[in-house]
Image (cartoon, rainbow, N blue to C red):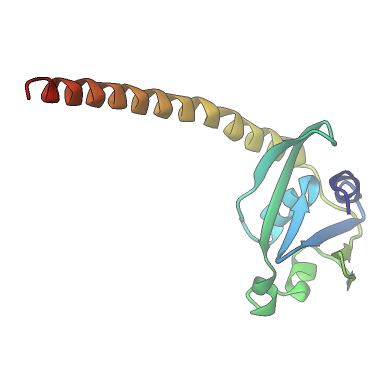
Length: 147
């Protein structure tokens, strides 16, 4: 299923969807917000997706978590107040009365703020390492000049 379709499905206020992608279950945007708020505080990633034209939040966990009963579909249904759910080959869909998205905007803003800070921190580390490497090379060249 294309990511654009998965994003559209995730925005549905009457469904919560876990998409099966290989050995993982993943959820996006609104569903990722609901998952972290009501089920488990897993790490949420943000990535700009060209075909969507926006940053997309995603969360994933191994299928084995369900198989080992660490988290069950029944427990997820209870946590998100879903009266029913069904599985198909691509996803597990939970039917909701209404998806509570009051905190979604601030949730997404906070995640994107953290992601936007990361490149700056990474650049500082790279600059520092480059300076250390240059100093080491200068020292190493000087040490061998006397031989």
